[in-house]
Each structure stands twice: as C-alpha cells, then as structure tokens.
Length: 483
Image 1: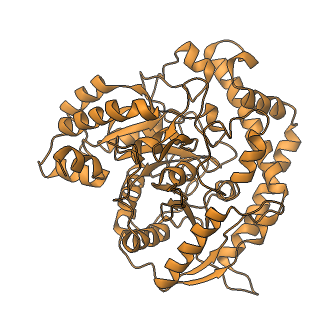
Image 2 (image 1 turned 45 degrees about the horizontal axis):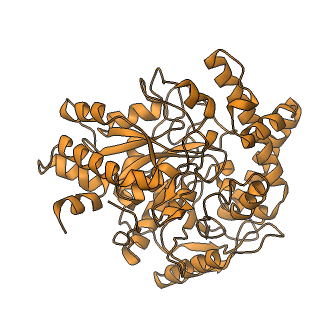
C-alpha cells in the first residue's frame, strides 16, 4: 500500500496521532485530503462548497491544540453555520440568493476548538426533510457502493465523503434518522447522540420538538466516541440538558459491555408493512453474533412501536417546523419565500403546517411525550417484567434505493414510509442509537444494523459497538468508488 492510500484509510484518531507525534503536519494532511476530494468528488457530488485555500491557511497557522488538531473535516450544509461561508440547507432560495452565514453555530465553534480543519460543506436534501440527498439546488449525491443508488439523507453528502475516504470524518445531524440512514447506506458508523448532548444554538433552542441532534459520521467506533466527546456539553440557556456521561466516551472503547439483554426487531412493528428480506437477514445475523459474544437475545420490542398514531403526530411536528423555517428564512432574506423558491415536498409540508392550529400542534407534541414514556418502559422494565439493555433493528427496511425512487413526486412519500420504519421513534424519545456496517446483501449493498440504548447511555452503545467492531471488523471493506 502506498503512503497516500495508507493515509486515506486512517481514521481521524489516526490522523491526529500523526500530528501529535510529528509524523505529519496539518498542512500535509489537509493537502492530501483536498487531493482526494478533487479526485473522487466529481463521481459522487458529496462536497458542494469548497474552502480549500482558507483551509490551507488555517492548517499552516496556529491551530487550537485540541484532540483532533490538524485533522481534515467537512461540515454538513445544514445546522452548522460557518461565518463567512455559504449556508444553503439544500434550499433553492438560499442557493439562488448566494446566502453567506454571518456567525458560527455552537457546533462549528466546537469543531474548530477540537483542532479540526474544515475543507468545505456537504450536500443535503432541502431542509433535511427526506432520506435521500437529491436537492434541486445542488443535484444528487451518489452512493460510493453503487453510484446509481442513493447515499441516504439528510447527511448523505457527509456519509458519501467519509465512506469514499475523502475525509476520515464529517459533521452530520439527525431529526428522524439522518445520521443513521446514510451511515447504513454507505457502510460507515453513525452515532445519534442523546437529545441535547450537542447544543443546537445559538439561533435554535430545539428543532422538530426536540427531535433534532448534531453529531458526526465516521468509519470507526473510536472516532465516533472521541469526536462526540469534543462536541458534547451544554451551553447556558439550552432548553434541555443531557444527563452527564460517567466519563469520556473515548475511554469506553474496548471496555466489556457485560452480558446484555437484547431485543431483536427484524421487521416493521407497524401493521401493514412487510419486512424486507435483506433488513431481516441483517438483524438475524447481528443476533447470532451477539449470542456468540455471550449476550441474551430474544425477539422482542416496545409495544408502543405498534401504535399507528405516531406517524401522524410526528408529521404534524415536521410540517409545522417546515412552515416556521420558511417564515424565518423569509425574514432573514427580507422577502416572503414562495412556492417558486422551494421544492414541492417542502411547500406541501409548509401548507400542511400552516393549516394546523396551535392547540392541534400542542396536542401532537403532548401525545408524543406520553408515547415516549410508554416506549421507555421496555428498557426500564415494569413490575411484570424486567427491562432490556438494547433494541436491535434494521436502520432501513431494505438496501439503498435507486436515485429518483424516493424523490418521485407521486410515490415518494409512500415509499419513504415503507423504508423509514425504525429511526424517527428514537429522535422523539431522545435516546442514543448507532448504525453499524455489519451486513451486505447478495448484490454487495450495505444494510446497516441499528442499536438503541436507554436515554443518556452512549457509553453502553460505544462499549458494545467496539466489541462488535473487533468481532466483525469492517475497516478493510471499501466501496467501488474511493480514494
């Protein structure tokens, strides 16, 4: 393996070690990552805004002495404003207006403080409201395992960039599955943190009624842990505060998780939706591996996942949030945002949201909160039964779909519902969940497996994920398009 290929395969922790030990300079790492982006991105359209010369200048300057000093990184073009840089959120109107952010979001400040060097911004669907990255503003991001397929969404650009080795890690966010879904489709690690583990501010207190979180996508568990350590922690005035972890997540890597009680859900809990055989096979294989590692595994899941009202209540929250987003961007731009400024899907959501009364919105939020308490009893247990430590399910009800399949104007929403059966529930409950690349189908397409822990227990997820990474390593398995 030549030096460039070896560097491309190093994770962010490995990159940081090179800088710390003097084996490489930040400038060398940044130049190498820029070369990889220039070589690979034309095939995938993952990076939509480049800031290469600014990144080179920062790498050559006095970088903060953080844990990832000099490591190349990308920001998702949604929810991580970067002062002086474009910020479009996939929105047609912002792309047309050439909108530039005037200040950093908190997560961007923490990225910088960690010593990471931002090389650009990654593609995302408009307002993050679907699970495929095909915005009209910037065109589709292609999956590095099969460029005719979706890379997922809404963090599809970040996932494709990491999977194809452009950068070792990238920023991501998740309001209904947007870290885990692209991680599943691109065969990387996607850890959705507990609600409020990473702050959303300063302009946003909560998003989608507390469902949206900030995080990263990575290729290794140790990177997922170490980067979350760097980004986590409350800011004064946050509306929610995540419970403190017992210690740094990086120290949980390699620790024995103990003998866990695990429930398997290989197919959709909602009635009327059939399990895709690939998704079910991925969960069954994970269950066998967990049993081999000594865990107690049974087919079980929270009964509340079978309640059909969840979809309607969550849709109300999303639709009202889209209506607000368009109003806020209109205020920022100094003019009303119209149907000509956004994609049809989001105009539909906005119109639906504007038709919801305030009592109807609060009724949906209250119902979801009470439903979350019913969900929690599966982990905490009741007088009649002991609780579980983890739920294991597919991330998606099938492999990565073809580009265009979900963005079809007539069938897209129904197809999205068919696929998206396992993720948004845990945005609403606020629980941490992780997608791990443990299974590929007969066509060589990845099908990620989701592990869900109790509220606040990222430490348990990291322990188990690192155990699975050691037992069934994935680092040497690379997609057809990579640096």
